[in-house]
Amino acid sequence: MVRWSASVLALAVTGPATAGYLYYEHLNGNIKKESLNIGDSRDRATKTRANAAGQTPLNILLIGSDARNTAENQKLGGAKDIGTAARADVQMLLHVSADRTNMSVVSMPRDTLVSIPRCTDAKTGKVYPATTGTMTNASLERGGPGCTVATWEKLTDIHIDHFMMVDFSGVVSMADAIGGVPVCVDANIYSHTSTGHGSGLKLKKGTTSVKGKQALQWLRTRYGFEDGSDIARTKAQHMYMNSIVRQLRSNATLSNPDKLLGLAETATKALTVDTGLGSVTELYDLSKELKKVPTNRITMTTMPFVYSSDGNRVLPRPTDAAKLWRLVREDVALDGKDKKKTTATTKVTDKAAADDKIAVQVQNGTRSSTESAVTGRAAAVTGLLVGEGLTKAAADTAAPLSEEETLVRYPSADLAGDAQRVAKVLGIPTDQVKKSAAVDGVTLVVGADWRSGTKYTAAEDDTTPASANALNASDTKACMHVDPDYTW
Image (cartoon, rainbow, N blue to C red; front, top):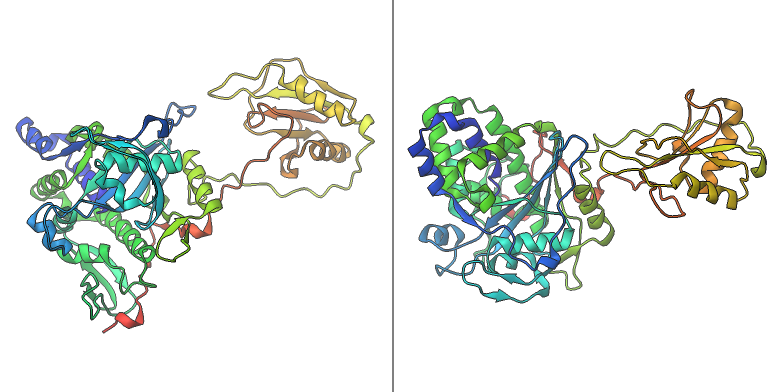
């Protein structure tokens, strides 16, 4: 289900030079490919613009299918019949920052009720009408993974570049090929009920290296972990995913060429990807980008949620989920390490002069790495100040500057009060009022964060909501809590 790291990193460590042309063609033939997005074009998100260095983030949707399309998948999944419609029981959005310094993963519980857009099966031409209040895992049976991608884009407004999907047998084969993945429980666990529910997972307290069917059981367990919900299962999947990243990056046995080739063989057979990732070369190139991110900058989260009125399903938590999607859209690291450090506000004893006595020069700093300056912006904001009674405000007619954030600068302590008064009139936070030797008097620089409008809106708080349950990939002490009713 969540062996994206195994699949791509296996190809990364194997490398193009390991195999000859014919073997490469063989591996390419193993990979199953489908359309990236088969949803209504009106619901698709716009691709993120490049940063100043020409880099763009990568958004990859990871899908774990519960398909029972083979005898092996039927046996592993516990279904009575072969061929039942596949559902997307695991969904994780992997976001790699534009500068490749950090990675964020957001899981959506399979029980989440969402709006699924109109999807058209690329193979059969069958059209599935849009639905509302539908469990998100049903998106996969509406034309394939391209509909799951479309559902995510409609919900989050995040452009998705690729998807990678794996089924039950793929999980088992990848766990075997890697040689096991360490997981931890804080008590003996047996996921089994008298009515036949449960994954069958049986482990002793502490850390165990799971592989094969046992790895699949870990990823599917809900009866026995914490409150027995799909949310607890998502947490266990995050721990597994973090562990597999650490395992692959430190596993010395992968230096064996035969084992590497075996891992590449297994990885390519296990995967279904979009057509843009449909070759070993493309997967290898992607893996090189993923390897740039340090383990301690990988953050796992779950979409903030609330339970539905009947308590059986979940819905995105209105404020927190929207904030999490915004952070991903704006390429803000969920570990908080990229967040700018705010400076403590200096206590000001200087009193401001009367408004009509405060001299303030207004500069146009709206030019950015991607946009030209807004013509006349300094004059427009000067007009706002004059309208508020600061009649000595004057627009600087010099060439526009480039300032990411709107600032009020002042040269000496005797003008600190005046500078803070200017900031207060316009609604600029006090931590954006700074003493600077680069100015001769109170100077307002209208930054790229205020390109239009008559009211300044301070930058939004970029901290990850606590309800997202963030977990860092370098955390080796994470351990699943076992429900006492499932101990032995």
